Every structure is written in C-alpha cells, then in structure tokens.
Amino acid sequence: MINYIYQLVNPQFFSVKYEDANIDGKVLIRPRYMSICHADQRYYLGNRDMRALSEKLPMALIHECCGEVILDKTGTYQVGQNVVLIPNAPTRTCGGIYENYDEKSYFMSSGSDGFMREFVDMPPDRVIPFENIPLSTASICEFLSVAIHAINRMDVAAHDCRDTIGIWGDGSLSYVIASALKVKFPKSKIVVVGKNNRKLSRFSFVNQTYLNYSLPPDFKIDHAFECVGGEGCYDAINNMIEHIRPQGTMVFLGVTENKVAINTRLMLEKGLTVVGSSRSGKADFIEAVELMQMQRIRRRLGSIIYEDEPVRNIDDLHRVFATDLNTPFKTVFRWEI
Image (cartoon, rainbow, N blue to C red; front, side, top):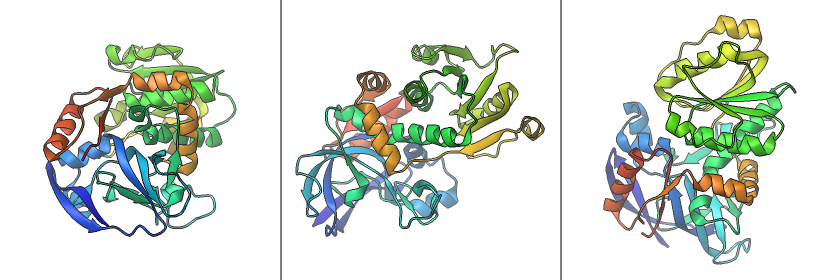
C-alpha cells in the first residue's frame, strides 16, 4: 500500500516521498486536523543549528493530529472512529522512567516522519479514541497532554503546600497549563506572569495576572511553571527563583537554543527542586481526552485556536506556516491532501 509522505527536505522546501507501508498489526488512520507547534516552525524556518537540521531532515512535520480510522486489521477500532494520535513511540519499558524520556524511544516529527501523510499507520496502543470533541479542538490534544504531564511531574515532586502556583509566560502553553491546573488543583490560587497585557486578558479564569515588571516585592508563590522559552528564559527563571518560597518546585517547559545563567546561590539557599518536563506519554493523552470532555475546557481551548483554510497541496503548507507566524496562539487546519 503506497503512502504519500510530505517531507520537509530543507528549511521552507517540501517534497513528496512515496513509501510502501507495512500495515500488519497496525491501525490505518486518515489525518483530519493538524496543529502547528513551535518545534515545527523551528524546523520549517531553519531555526535549529545546522547539525540538528542535517541529522533530522528530511522528515514529515507535525506531531499534533487527530484522524479517522480507515482500516484496522487488529480489530481494536471501528472504521470511521475518531482518534488522537500519540507521536511518542517507546521501544522498551524501564522501571521508573516515563516513556517520553526513554533514550530508546523515538518521537514522530523529530528525527522520524510526523503526521503530514496521506495516511498514518500506528500500533493500536498509540491511538486514543474520542467522542463529542470538535476535531479542531481534538487536534491540540497532544499539546494539552504536555501540560498535564508537567503538572503531574510537579504533583510528584512538590511538597504539599500548594496555596499559590505561579506560571511565567502568557502564550498558549501557559494558557493550557493554567486551564488544567484550575481543574486538578481547584483550591490553589493560580497566578500568571507575562509581558503582554492583551494576552494576559485571556486568562480571566485565573486568580490573578501580573506584568513581569510590576510584581510586588512581597509577591510569593509555592511552586512555579516556566513556559516562556527563547530569550525570555533568563529573566523568567531568575524571577521565579526570587519569588518562590523555600523548598518550592519549579517546572521548566520553555525551550531555548542558548544556555541560561541562573542564580544558583539563591536556589541552594532556598532548597529548590527543579523539574524538566518535555512531551508526554499515553497516560497523559488519556487524561487529556478526559479533560476535553468538560465543556469549560473545550470552551477555553477553543478560544486559543485559529483555524486556517484547509491544506490541499504544498502551496497550502507554506501558507499555514506563514499564517502561524502571525497567530498569537494555536494554528490548526483541516488536512485534505
């Protein structure tokens, strides 16, 4: 069975690869909706170092996707069933290590082909069925699962005092972290610190928002999430260290290509715990789908989604990536290739 795979060969240059797919023991899924991640943009624009680009390209982009089952010889799913796809593919089980950190795992759209294909062949355990969720919303399930994974990591690492939890960053990742925290820790005060008043206005459901340059001197938090990334990491992390209470836990999610200098003296004096969090696993996807069954979560997620025109050819691919650069939150699109 011949599959059409739309690969990024070089930054801003796509080509079609034809591949004979092995469907034995696999579920065949027709992608329906996709969402663009910052990681996709970094590859598309060539904003990775040359070594990473040469090692990982060519490959198909996109790891946020939902689709429709078109064939399942395993008998696990029904034809026509809507599913979300898990891009993380573990190759072994190591006690105590999450599947998304196993060195032998591989991640689709980061060194192996992502979901920009005519159809996707997946092991049945890498597929999660869903109902009563709009496809445009379901397409960002992976994104929500990343937030859930980070929150669960904090829950394991942090002490029990959780009166105030801070989030640094005012983008889409901060938004889904805040949305999930309000459900999972309803008694905690959720505070968001950002640099853009217009973006912060979207966080009307949290307890308080601050501009990063106007934090009160007596502002304190018990635990914190860093969702800034890029050049803003330095200020955000050191801001967190300054305002967090002793023995607090800081979860880092923001990605930067540069090394960041941090105040280790104050970290040591306060006895802080630092948790790095990246990607997610099957358990996080299951929880994300469950969370999306809640109307208020679907409504909140819907407010950060911009649905572009359908993608039917390579020219359309360039269009959606260009559109995403001018979209403050998540760009999703219907896949009609």
